[in-house]
Every structure is written in structure tokens, then in C-alpha cells.
Image (cartoon, rainbow, N blue to C red; front, side, top):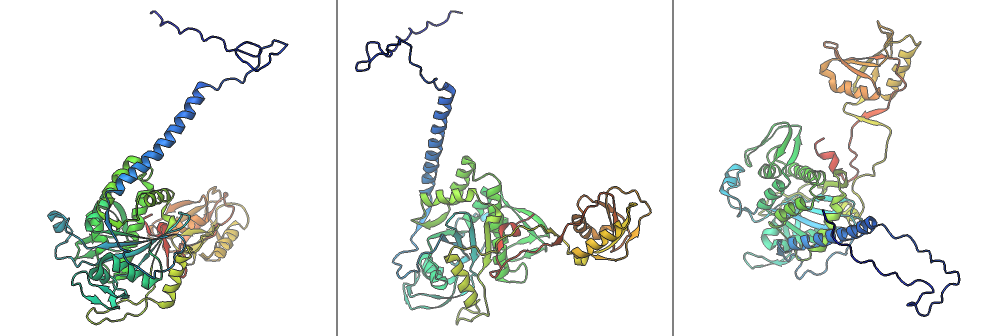
Length: 495
């Protein structure tokens, strides 16, 4: 096959001492000047490619978020606000969930019992605090029935002028919309709200469906005829409509609004878990699809724009459930309001301390300290153990008995000898009815073998083998919640 003609050779470049380089004296030696070796073409191409890639990703990311920014419904919750609290560390977002249902389909109304007239009030009120280093998000739930004082305002429905007066917190939205809601929350918490985000029933369902549902677990059955919620004990994968039933249900477990608040926190932790573990935040295509779905049906303040969304997106990429923490504002005895009924009053000292902690951008949960103690499901103090020596090593049973007792297990303090004395691997023999206790005991004996023995009863048996070295310290799992009774997301999501 004929080869294409080669391009003419490039004429030699003038070197030292040659004409064409005026002003440079030649060298008397006449030896050619040594030049550094040329950079390989693949290196130049890779460097160029990486530069283009970085610039492209940055440009696309900004363009993407800018396009999403234009799809957000806008409100002005900070209009004409004066004498506001001073700014603290981090960023505070007031997240409210309204009972807006005008975009709900007729099928959804029937499936999730969403009939009836909306109350034009807030079902959910949360302060979401993003730390200044963007490594932690703290969520504080404000119960909808909280006692609050609404500042003087003009009623958005009747246009009447109202003086400052007591209300249930969720009624602020009905009287004065987002503006009065923000003013009432700032007055009660002494926290400056930086951004406002409003979610209704439609956007809630779309959000959950956009991430393909969330996993929720419950230790007890949850059933509420008012919302149609019906979950047996166990773990469930909920779609958007089912998740809405879960967070709205008030009568599933005793009719307590505080229990509903805890379920809302569990849901939010599960949503964060799903978003951060499913690759949504790292996949531009998925991120755009989810963001477009979510943001097209929410309302936010004008200042919640491109820069804020990019910062929030970058922060969320490094999040995990343990990066989030949840609590509810501490309450005390209720205070009745004429015409509104009973309310939940906040504990003045504890709530003030809670909001001061947020203002100072400090975590609500205790600092986690690494420990050599292994958490187990059943406390050692509840587990009875008989130790037997399965080897010819003198006093091995006695050593194992003493070590287990020192860790908290209720040993018989009368170790014996097994029928066989050639056991190489330590055995934990147990009745199937006490399997949780057996698993907890086995963690104290690393490498041991669990052996089911029907009819053995409540006393577990340890047959010490030649592999025994030491007992690992164990203790029952307990979530250290600290003075604000706050828990991290990894403590409330399904394991």
C-alpha cells in the first residue's frame, strides 16, 4: 500500500556561532549545544487532557446548578425584617414541611388518605445547621405544637393588624406565611436563619421516589388509620407515598407528636444515608436528575442560589450518617392557649443552651472516643456461663472463668473438665432460645465456635480450647446522647 508523502524536513535551526542568531557570539569549540530532552508526547497530552477535564467538570457543574437554580420556586421570608439575631458560626436553614396537596393526584389521595382540606400550616419544622467546616449537619426538630409568641404582623388572609400574641408554632405559617414563620422561630431561638426551604406533600413524594425509596426499620408494628400507615415490625423499603404516611402518622404509637418528630428524624437520617451511599452525589447524571426533581417542587429564599447549592453539594459528598446528628428541642409542661388548646412549652434553660451550642457551631453529640471495649447486643451481666476445660492444660478452665467474670459475665465460679481434653478451638454451646446471648459471649472469645445444643437451657457453656489467649472486654450497646439527647444518623438508621 503506498505510503503518504512525508512532509519536507524542517530546516536546521541556527545554533551557536551560526548566522541567523544576531547578538550571540559563537563558541570557538564548535561543539553543538546540549539541549534538555523533549517532553514525551503522551505526558503533554495527559497534562492537557487533565486540565481540560478539570475545567470542563467545573464549568459543567456550575452550569448545571445554575440551570437548576432557575427552577426553584421563590419566596421572600426575610422581607422588612429588623432587629434580627447576630450571625453565629455555620449556616442555619429553616426547613418546613407544609400540608400543601393541590398537586396530588386523585390516586395518591386515595392510596395515602390525603383527602380533606389543607390547614395551610406547617406539619414539620426543623432547623438544619451546617457547620462552618462543612463536615457536620445538626438537625433540631421544633414540635408543631410548641408554645410560641408571634411578633406583631398583618394577617395574610384577613389583612388585620395583630399585636404580638401566643400561638402554636405551626400556626405562624397560616397567619403570616414564611415571613412570620421565620420571625417567630428567630424570636424563640435567638438564632439567625440564613435560608428558608419549604417542602409540600408533592415535593416530598418526588424526593423519595427520585432516590428510589428509603429503608425504614421499626421494632414494633406501626398502624395509623388516619394516614393508612400499616407496617409490621421489621425493615421496610418505602416509596415516596409510603414515606409520607410514615412521617405524617401521629396515632401510630400512642398519639404523641414527639414520637412523630422522632420518626421524621429517622426518615431524614435514612434519606441522607441513601443519598450518600448510592452514588447520587458523585454521579453527575443521577445528581442532575434527582436535583431537578427535588428543586422543581420546593420553595426557597432568593439567596439560596448557585453558590449555596454548590457548597452544600460539596459538603454532602463527604457526608455519612455519622456526619449528621438529630435532636428535638427540650420541652417541659404544656401551656394552654385560649382558642388553640394545649401546647408544648420549651424548657427555658435547656433549650437556651441547645441554641447557644448551635450558635457557637459546636456539635450536639458527645465526642466519640475510640475504645477497645467491643459493643454487644446483650449485657454480660445478663449472661450465665459454665466454663469447662477442654484441654490438658492445668487450670485453663479456672483462668477462663475468672477472665469472663472480670468482664461482667455471670460465671458459675466452678469450672470443670470436659469429657474430651483435645479441643483445639474454644466452643460456645448454647440453647437456640438464647442465641443473642451466645453471640455476645462469642465476641468476648475471639475465634470461638458457636455450637447449637437444643435443651441446654439458659446457662451457656464454654469449652476452653487450646487456642484460648484472652477474653476481650465487651459491654452492651448504648448510644451516648449527651445533655441534648442527640443521636447521630448512624445510630438511628437500619443496620
